[in-house]
Length: 401
Ligand code: GLA
Image (tube, rainbow, N blue to C red):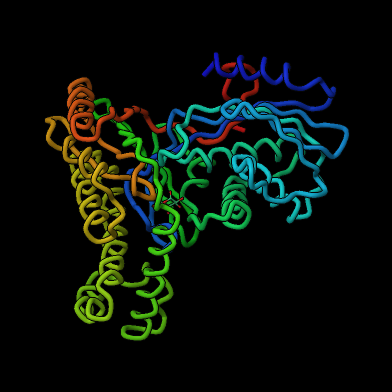
């Protein structure tokens, strides 16, 4: 990361003149979810890790009320007025930062003008949460520059608000949460109802977390995501009427209750019954995965990941042929102990647990098999669980912010 930090500092100095005010650099990582998919907005459980790909941001306060932002990726420099922040339809990338600024203002924080330059190596639109990382990087930057004391949980919630209300995407809390709170060599077991979390050691010399990027643009993802949310709500209403009135989310329904009423719900709506079955069984799989990690039983974790994929593909129906193909290719390789789609679905990445001695073989077979059928090679990334958002005090010195 050292070279990228130096490069960003140079870019910042080229694009902006020194205001003499407080300056700093910050980073926020992307994420991959080990297990617990489409459970966060159902008050359920997730188990993500932060990865070794980041958004890095350099900033300095200004004496006026202007916000100037330079994106290296888009090679665009935009200017806004702190007193008049509204959505930018033309350059949508800026909304992730503007939305965060607006949220601080909504909380009564008096902000100063700021110059920002940022860059990143999280592939955009691949399902590794580059947008949440951009929000979290912006929030950490704004908070630090203005000496605003905010817990990381509150910071993640603020970013989620920005995404839901300003950017306009009805995501759950997982992505912002893990980008803000990730820990090295730990997965975060997050209870998305209470917002409490526990860092579970994810330490193994034998297995590696491998991500395969289908490079499929996730076209339908927004409408299908909202559709799934709607179906889950319908299921809750059904259970509330037919089981107990104190059911407020799918989290409140146990497996026996779901199974007992499955046919009845299926007759009412087959998709709704299947969506509910996925969420209810996925929550159980997350808890079992936490147990597996505690027992250092990665083979058990891998099996649960495999089950999660089947459930997402057959019941929740958010996979696609490219994701299924990569999962199938990966599972065919000795050394792969778990393979599943991860994130919202309809493209994006898979997450795999692969024995380190089989990594090269894995890459070769998955690349060749995928290219043969899809006509392009998937991108493959490997990462250990990393720390969440941080201040980059000196070049190369990554202090927790
Ligand atoms: C997207 C959302 C998350 C979560 C996942 C599915 O990544 O941003 O909040 O709902 O999909 O698990």
